[in-house]
Image (cartoon, rainbow, N blue to C red; front, side):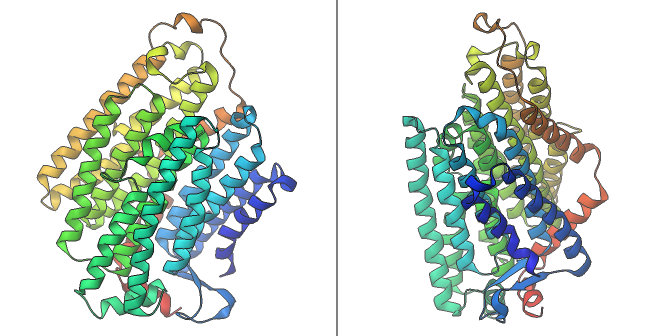
Length: 488
């Protein structure tokens, strides 16, 4: 199906034609988002969708693949990208060379979409590098010393991750003589327990774990997310780390290797729980809003990794649902942080207070995001965390479940602190004068994300359940993914 190739081609061409297209960047992202929804209907009706580039048969040719997990991720990534682009139209007015920002943004989006639809490991790696390089440049976009330092650190850590991933791909190619993921799945399923496949699993866990910022591979994330412009931070935290890290990791472990080793699942659970705890404790100590949100991302990514490590249908459903809820709430909170900095000129919690009197919309929407990410009912984050913890208890992981509950309580504590210090109390003396106004585009994006945070918890739409079930089944089929793709 030729539609698949346009998920990368549209943002890719837009990136290079941005000077001529100008405002059409918004329409480009809107088109890709609409295509994602349309593709979901096709996949739900017909199952796996394949596009063979140049008509070559699998495994000789390059192919693009869409299943339930693919369309689930495409919808999340492109919806968040659309709202961030709308927000950026006003937020980025104070920056010079804005066309460079939008060009890099579209390159990053093209890379993320390419990772999601790629049917072979080498092209997945190429798209991963496209997205990563664009992200390095976007982190440094403000060209302040701390921005450049954060970007350099991110690039070094990203290069290390890429080495692990590329080495794993090379070893896997030497073993299977193919790069096509469906073909690899069939070959690996015929020789379970291979030592080389186990070693490649470790390399992928390190490489994609670093991309996902799992502890102890997390050092790059706080600086990168706090230094980048807030729209970039929203993309990085909301969808980027999940696409490059958790999506790729789950696709490889479940569909290529059909991992049944308890050691691999335990490693995912262990690193997930470690990330939950470390991220939450470090977030508690922050006074910079964006650094607090960055450490919170590490903690929430831990929940998703933990869910995949539990590996039961309910756990996987909870993990995927948490990807959606975290994408909405964390993107919203970073946009809130950008609005606060835009209006006040600071994001230091200790210098803020009483902002509900001046920018009540930001306070109202940030409350929705904070409660969702903390797991407070009736917001979506409550249900995804409940699914994960229930699945862990059913699987016998009682201690890990208790830790997950305690971390959720700790998360609520530091978000209540954030709400109290920033939006309630008395206005600081230096902020009694009128603050900078927020433009419609910024308000629109924040309101839409806040509504999503609420709707995913209060109204579990049949379409959402269908999309979630389809995504879960795509992972649970294991290396049956290979047979499903080959027979197309």
